[in-house]
Length: 455
Image 1: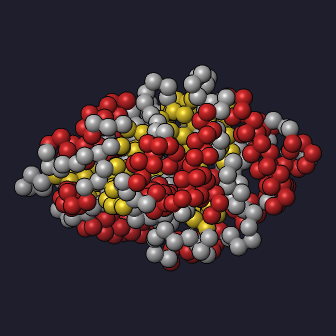
Image 2: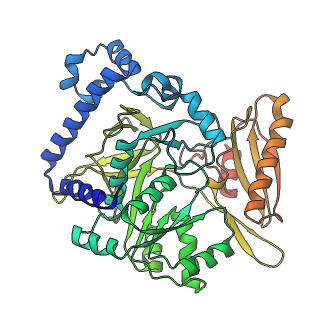
Image 3: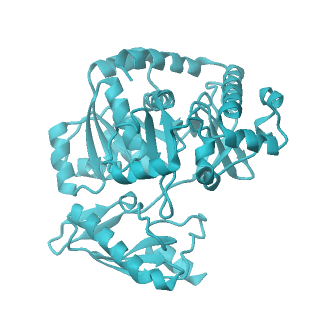
């Protein structure tokens, strides 16, 4: 998106912050009805699904959203080709593109941004944004990152050509990495990507040379940078920290605010809609972007309707996060929410014989997709040793799965310069969720391991 165009559209989007709650709901409903009619006319899947639920075209104008059928990732993948509204989007073609084309920010067919869904195992899913949807999402993220700033303050910041470092997983079709890169280009800033697989010593050298004044990335990764700052290994002057990709707890938020001495903004997003909300502090919780999405919570289950993506409409799509919706406050037209559960992983820290330490981030290893592998986890057993727990029901496939897991892991450790780390694969009948959270952590601690084994 061009710089001047982005500023103009950002100004219009920020005007929604001054709407009343009633005006926001009216805007949201207007966008929702437009999406429903578009899906009816252009998506064979939605038209058939609506009709099967007893919904006709006339009802699209006023039927409550809660009366429409829900879908999930399995349904999306099974009916991808007839759910999307554009004939040149085929799931098989996207898989070939993902497998054969080098990862970069160039759009598929020159016009579609493809986001690879996260998840530890199984066949990957794809979320596709056309140019209009991508630009709407970018505006939402830029607004969120600069949430508490007025337009004059934003103009002053951008005229200074901010230097932005992004610390996260950057070597895949991750929505965050692609969106941040395009967003930085749009605002005319310079950027440095630090992949979580990069050795820590290289972080220090790159940061010192680049001298960023804005930090964006996974909070667990930004925490490591904050610790380097506190120890004096790195000197930075940062005006803003933007957290994304993982939950940001109150304790970690406080640490980042103290380490960098600047505001910390937490962006809430998912592959399905990269701009869901923003959190500027712990007082009022998360502000949901009601002008870009509709988020419902029924019986503890969260459903997303993305209001800006007409290429791949997601209507009442189930999200695995858990939210509690709060009543809006007088000072904002946006829905307030509290995130109960989301991605929250430990880091694997290793130490060699000379006392040098480095880490392995869970998102550096979550992309394993091996036939026969149902699920897997990592558990550290010593300062330089870990094991990989693998759930492979078909015992005949275990040797091949083991060989491929070891091969992929060796490559990851070699890239991270952790060749001294020893690892093994251990097969287990079932990988159980954490009994406290109900989720299966990718990296499980000794405490959680002992608790699960006792059950």
